Amino acid sequence: MAGELVPIQGALHYADLTDQSLRVRAVEAAAQYDTEALVLVTLAYMTTASRKGARTSPKTLAAYALAVRDFVPWAQTGGVQLLRPGKRDGSRYMAHLQRRPSEGKGKHGGLAASTVAQYLAGVRALYRALHWAGATEAQPLNDVHAPGDPTPGIVKNPPYMQELGGVLEGCEPRLAALLLLCSHAGLRVSEALAVRRGDIEGQTLVVRGKGGKGRRVPLGARVRQALAELSPVDTEGHFFDWDYGQASYRAAKAFRAAGHPWRGFHAARKHSGTRLYQATRDFTRVGLFLGHASVDTTRRYVAVQDDDVAQEVEHW
Image 1 (cartoon, one colour):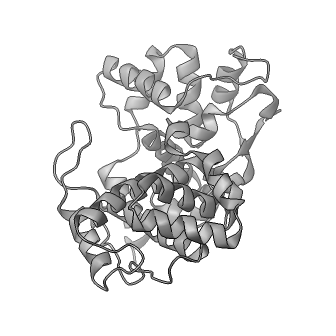
Image 2 (spheres, helix red, strand yellow):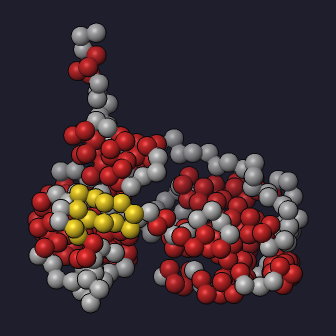
Image 3 (cartoon, helix red, strand yellow):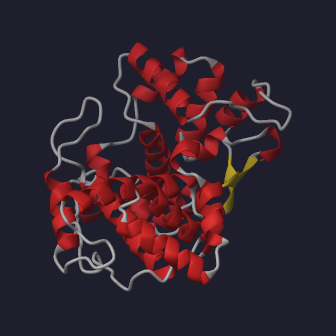
């Protein structure tokens, strides 16, 4: 799916153009509301000129491409001149997103605040790309800020806790190993799916994480045993040959069979963050374990009891 959403080779062609040719292509694409050409301009900028450059994650590129594919048709229908947008066009688009019903399977209501913010980030990237191409100085979303969701993510999607044991008991070994990598080793599912036998060094796993960052993760005995029982699926030593959709399908089926709702791999990663915080009471150590750049991010992965300090203040 990512290959279809993110045509990197075409984007690199745009990056190789001369300044004048790039400007002409970008101006023509904007004037004609050529969505796919504007996607390529955005991806060219993201992979060659943005802060992370070629290390920008495929997931981010896919999300930004989706945002451009949403925004450009809306702008054309709404009479927005892409290179000369009105001062209220950015806020108009945000209002459009906030009013739009969710189209996800089984979901009701409007788009989540995080989804609105993701679309806006993609459109900001489009205008940074158009500026990079020399097509416009306009930045219509600079002063547009989507309201945050008042309900914390840890409340909306709490960690799996007691239910995880029953699910693991009924899993086939490869799926159980994947869930353990997320719930006990704290890996993102993309990191877990990329694990190779050669990444294991004794009781430590070398992880190539988000944004190209590497870290060393201690593996508990149960995770080590689960991986030791698996045979690699290819000559490079990978333990999994599933993409995200295939892994999610298998996990959802296992959770249903155990009588529990499936809430995604993120809830498994929150399991590891919550358990490690309960053991250490140290957000910094938990953040290092999870590979977070900011402790503020780590706080969103830890379920803290409302009476967490009750004993400490009892005899004040």
